Image (cartoon, rainbow over all chains, first blue to last red; front, side, top):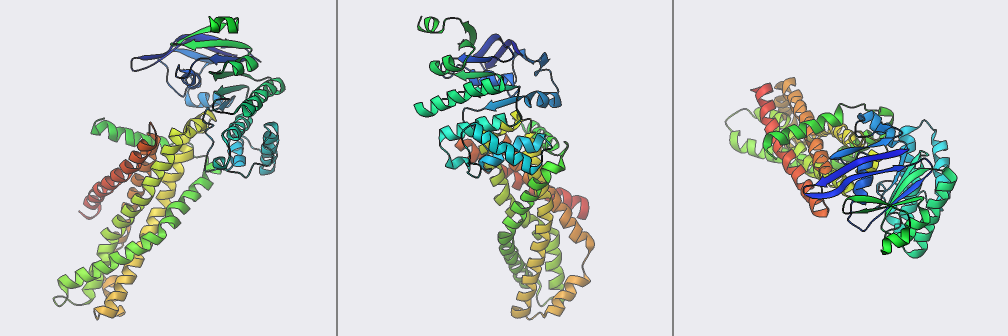
Length: 228
Length: 245
């Protein structure tokens, strides 16, 4: 379970997160919805200790990432798979090497076992046979799928998605949404999806929160509250 | 940022990059790759530069002392000049221009495209993954390049002296070897080790600190080369004071 308690973050005088609190229960996928530029990505990065926060803390199974030492922080992060909005694939490595990197760094698997794991992950995201391709040769949607495969490499307990469908065509958007839903069913991961796309939010979220002007609020009746 | 905090920041970056668990099982390939990138990648340009350093040295020395001292003195003068000063410093400046900028640009691009954040989230220490191999790779490659550059410069200057200045190889070689002091050679190598550290640290430091986009990446590459060059010349003076002063 992840508890976010009174998280606040400002950049100079700009308040991005203002006393944000919510909880991600085990097996739940929480969606944080909000227009572009409201601080959704800042929220994700603050949750993982990539950005220092002004106040508050994020507890992973009771352990505060803000108070953790470097090695404890890394241990927490090993439980998290993160899909970046811009994919953040390493352009000096091919698809297979990108997915294999966390396995090589954190496991004692043999090269053969790593290759098999990479192939099975590519199969999960529907990108089989693309292991030798370099990211710059892939379309935006394909990169997003590879990023999901890389995020799954260490079989994480939590999955974080930063705008998983932004900039994709409708067909690829449906594919990514289906993938997120399937992964949740298959691996029962907990996680968080930040998006500005209402249909994605409705399709994948167990709980939906709205982030606006630094404040967060849980949405009970999505359409009604949004359209009001 | 004032000068002192910049120096502190730069030094702390170096210590954060090197004084960490190396995990050689994972890092050794990346270190070897950097040895190749810096060493083999810089070799052609270093050979060309060193050849001209040898030529200019012998021509200038001959112009200044020919006819006033025995001819073997030219071998001694060029040899000591190349080993103490010209070999280490010109090799370092060339490698700085070529490698510090590319390190800053590569790491800076990784910063702006969130690849460094991705490393952090994958629980991979970006200093171990990116800085350590570059610092260690340059640390290994630069002294070797310096020795090759010195050999090249002396070979070319000896050849020029033989064919154009009427100083036979034997005479040139006599001056070179008879007045050879290990301190000159190893003093030059000590310099190149320090130069290697500042070249790679500058490249990585400015790359890691990029905030923004393409323009900032370009600036980082420029700052990396300028800073490395200034530090090379400053260290050259300080090390000369300690070893030869």
